[in-house]
Length: 286
Figure 1 (cartoon, rainbow, N blue to C red):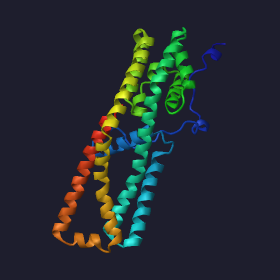
Figure 2: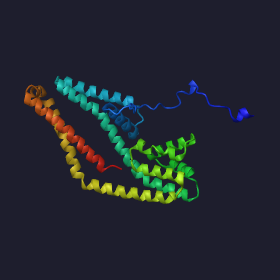
Figure 3: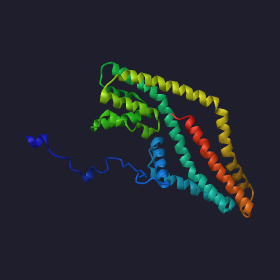
Figure 4: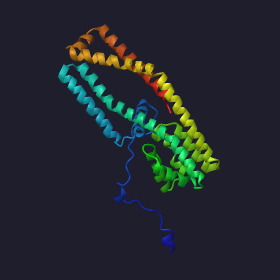
């Protein structure tokens, strides 16, 4: 009888090794160099974009699009600088697509967050405990926020408490407002308190923030579009002259002043793009 109640530790079985999905990440966290920072940025991009593609496959897609566009331009122009430019452009295209998916997913999560918080408050007001209410809300919430909540529910079914299960919502989504939600759950489990009032205030605060961000975007739409056009037009002009005129880049790079002017232009373009996208990112950060 005692052996049935306490069968001992569960031993690892090779037959079950393929059940869990491998968490593939390029960042190891062992150093703080530029390479580690780039790897961490790419890991966060793939995780927060909601793409169900392995990061290694997405990197392979970047290389494939880069070689395809670079090879196409080489066949058309037979110019090495044009080929390099096309390769870099094709290399960045999948990353830009993943960034677009991440921004769209974050916007959808922010729009779903007030309704989810209010529904959780209503479920808790009926007398159910937080875990039961959270499980009900997770089942009724659509994607993409519902996917993250249902992941937290599966973690609680595996033995984690609810506060630990929702602790990494910000890391998985990139929505900083979810930090307040996970903190409210954790504080309620540790010290108690009026969770219903906290959730209702969180829903009201998120709605006010969404209203402010929408008004800010409407007021600055001309400035944002102008900044984006200033970043997009110079590469398109260079690409146009490279395709329409033979040896355009070769003639430009044959002289010292041509190489100097092109290098300065590329440097200023990169610096300007960094500051523009950083400002746009901060102005719409949730």
